[in-house]
Length: 187
Image 1 (tube, helix red, strand yellow):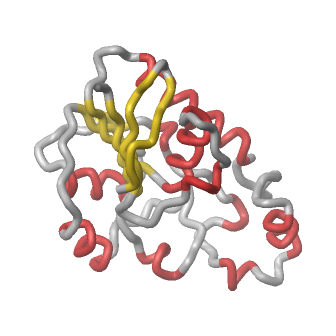
Image 2: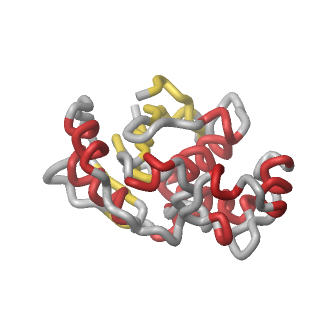
């Protein structure tokens, strides 16, 4: 059975502050994030794919030592533009932010990437992996948004984007069935 493991990177200092740590902020894992990752179960995979962002590459090295990753540029997190590396508390009085949140975070991000373009980018990068019959178990160490974009586009039965939110270091194990993903378990 072909499987994909989708794992979100470990915690960063920005994650601890509740910041929008997106595609512009290339911060490392924080000590707490490293400690938490070291306590997680180890998963087996034949192939490893990561976002180019440091937090993902560091997580992949901790969870899959000895497995050389393929870096996929389009697996990077959404560019949060004017909201990048700021917390919801810091943005609370920004009318552009309030409008974006009130629109279910689905509209344009000032100076950033439109969520629809972000999802299309992640899905286009994943589609060849899904179509490759030589894939056995592949692990993707990416961002929460990347996981949500891919699974909301390829998993069956269909579920909305935000229903696939995961905490740092967590994710999903999915099987490939009839060209689609079936989520077998939350990790």
